[in-house]
Length: 225
Image (cartoon, rainbow, N blue to C red; front, top):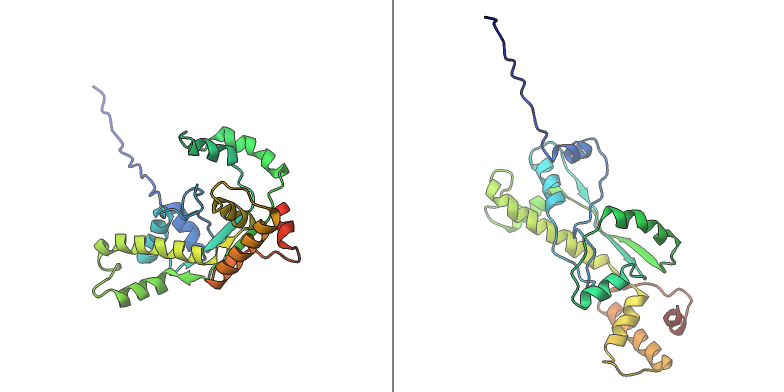
C-alpha cells in the first residue's frame, strides 16, 4: 500500500475591479462612456453605473486617494447609422454591435463626417463630491455606511450627465433638422428656412445653450452644407 499526499493549492480569482483600480492607483487616465451607447433621440440616456462604481470603491476603500472626473461631450454633424435608425423607427429591433461591424467600420474613415465638436466640462473630484453630499444630506456617510453607497453612485452618475449636458454643443445639422420637423410636412423656401434656423440658433443661445459657431459662413451656406 502506497502512501499518497494531496496538495491543495488555493486558486484566487481576481476581483473584477482590481485591474482598473490598479491603473487609477498608478496615475493612469481612463475614459468611459457613461451612457453605454449612443442615444437614438439625441437626449442623454440613464447613466450606466459600472465604471462609476469601480472609481468610487477605489476612493472609499483608500486604495486611491482621489480621482478627478472630467465630463466630455462629443458632437458631430453626420449620423453614421442613418439607415439603422430608419429601420428602428419602422419597428425593427436595435441590432447589437458585433465584431463584424467593427471590422467593416474601416470604411468610416473615408467618409466626410462634417463638423465635430469636443467640449470639456469643469473637472471635479470624487472626494469633493462626497463632501458636498455629506453636507447636503444629514447623516449621509458612504465611508461608514455601505447602505449609503448606492445613493452616492446614482447621484454621481446623474451629476456627470448634467455636466455633459451643460457643455453639449448643438450642431448645424440638428438646427436644420429641428426646424424642418416644426414645419409639419409643408414645404418651405430656402430664405424662410434660413430665417427659422437663425431664429432657433439665437433662441438657444439666449437660453444659455451652446451652438456650433458658423465661422464666417452665412446661414444659407450652412444649410447647403
